[in-house]
Image: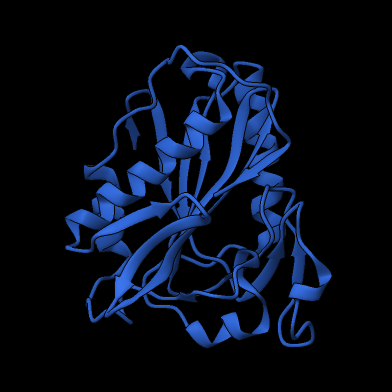
Length: 223
């Protein structure tokens, strides 16, 4: 499927993390060279932990429980696995505005709009990374964001918890934040499927347009 000149791909079977990294790197270079269109890739991974460029080994609490992969993206430790929708976003910021912070805000806003379509109010917090929602009186993280920019072409992206095994987060300090918990659409009482979220992401998608601000590119950035 293609929309607004961007290829959309949904992979139904879990994709090994190393395979996804290699595919992203190849597509990133093809986009930079003008050999392939931009890509939004929605998928799942088998259970694993990933370490971003700012990962602190002290925050890997139980390294023997699952494989740990270096991600090359911004951020710290996070978990991926069944029931979590991962979105890898490969856009050419030379065409859409060379501003990393603006790009990350665009990702956040997109996720918030998609969750709103699923009757979940989500938000960002200036002092915390990720996309958050309220579970009773507590604020909990429902989506993580970590990106990598190379030659102004993006890779990695976001991960939204739909119906994962939240117990897996006990093996890490998720994204370096210990004072707040992690939640999912299922944990909030929503019978949402990955396909439901995919439709909400598609319906709420607004292409990133060229902006006026510009900052120096970074190897990795996370919120």
